[in-house]
Length: 136
Image (cartoon, rainbow, N blue to C red; front, side, top):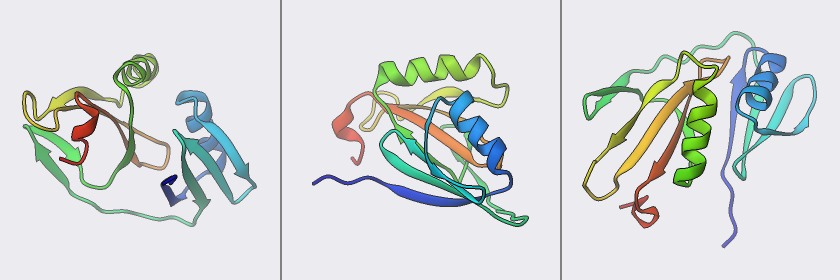
């Protein structure tokens, strides 16, 4: 079965959002106008729609002694691509949460890092030691 994920989120500034995703993350832009924009986030459609002031209030949670945002989205990448992206982002970002390995030496071992976009969204990039353990 061929399927892709789609999510649409409000944004504060279309131009800053486009700049961040295209120039900082290197994500391909899709259809867009002055009120919304689509991005190809590793084969998934990520849409931002210009909105009036909005606010998400969400708590953090703790996993392996690391404070993580409960509201976030992201992608799972192959290890080499994940490492390359982490290195690229750390050249310009001071807001990157340091990469961390969770469930080390256990089923579902994964490494992860987060960045924050201009709208305040936390984006998680993760890779699994064993790809077939993503849902286990």
